[in-house]
Length: 172
Image (cartoon, rainbow, N blue to C red; front, side, top):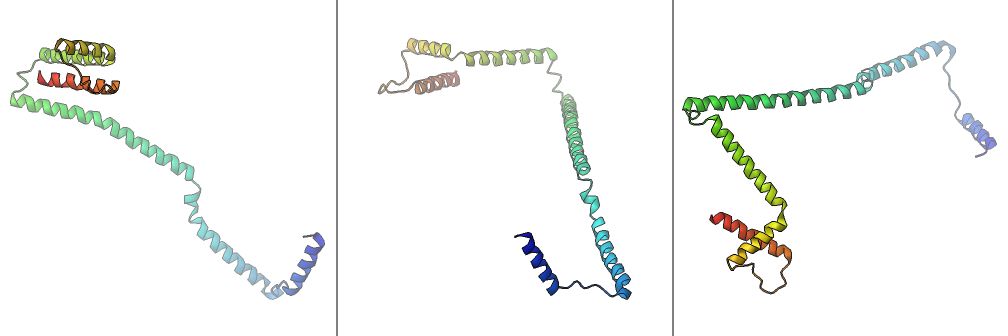
């Protein structure tokens, strides 16, 4: 739209919609009425400003409260576990079960469990040696995995060998 067209349109619109102003005698009361409305609207909006203004502070304080709760709960869990262990120890001592146990026996048993765990970890890492040893044992016993049709995959062989090893362990 060109500037002259806009001016022509604006003059026509103003002629159809004249600007009504209050008479001089009512002008001050009109201004006071308008200002009272504006003050009422701004007073209502001030009630919500406490929610709108400190949002970053509210977010930080909420996050801080959450971290505090997590830290307190995390610190309380080990103390509860220690209290439970002490309670169980007292209960066992009242029953007389602790007299049968000694620290030397517990240390020896813990050492044996550690050795077993290490042996399992070492043997789990050496699959090729395990397969060779298993094949040698199967050869000594004149047994072997089901060779059937000859189209068995190496994964099936490994599964068969593991099954044989587990069944031998279960039977002993």
